[in-house]
Image 1: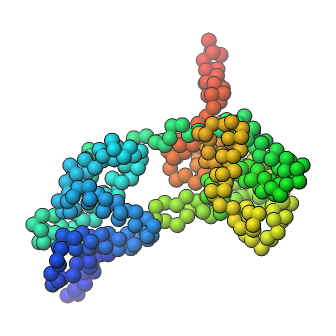
Image 2: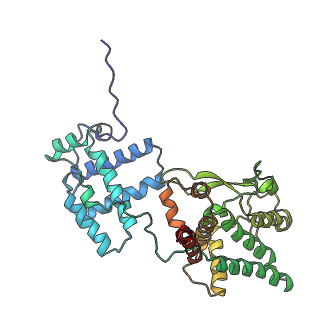
Image 3: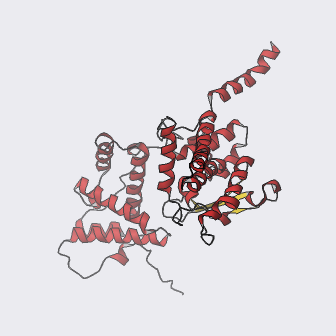
Length: 367
């Protein structure tokens, strides 16, 4: 008979508890061992410290709130904590759901028979962890969009006004023979690229010149037919997600080509890989993008609801209004789920009225 050796899972009580040692504070020692085990389990699944650390801090905050150890937690504790997050902290539903999800992950480890925490607690304290997160005491995901209802894209008129104003700053700097002409040209092009490829602010900041490439299906765009976004928004604990965005706006391609070939070399750092160069020869940071955006927006008297991310919203909205396939847009902006696209879809009143007329036209024709 062949006997197979049973290997303890990463995060199990068997690996984290030291047998034969009398602890001065056994409750604290058990809790610390649980956190070490949870960290080991998450590490084994490829999660990074910058994801694990905030989760651990949240578990400690929950412990402080309940004033009880995990083997004495009950669903009522979660109810009270969730209510305090809503009524006292005034947190958004999506944030509370995220917190509840972290508590669920931790307690699921503790009650999983494969990890051995239940018998360990029962032997040490005469009680054991139970499930405290259920459908009836956690927030369900009921809506596609739970963000700020004030967030919206640019209208087409607002977008044209904003981009025209950015171009005017270049002309003013040139006429005044000021040093800021190169930076103004860079920023005007940058805003066109955010909109023209539907990018996030950080994605834009981290672009390199070599990230643009050719698309055999769009030879008219030359070396600017595709954009390789290497620092897309990551899932928690995962590295940045890459995606290729196909160029669809010829005027945006013309703008970035002119910048790369005629303006960027004047910054005097040809060896630097970054697409957006500062006047001191470094890479432009996301905060600087935000500062210039707000300066232009406020100078034009546009609503503060508009942010750099509104340019990305506008990309999705305007392509939707132009009849571009929804699945194509989803791939362009890097959304895995179609429902996520609802966050960015705010079609204009004119578009809705036109669509209504098209929908009613057959009925009127029949009448």
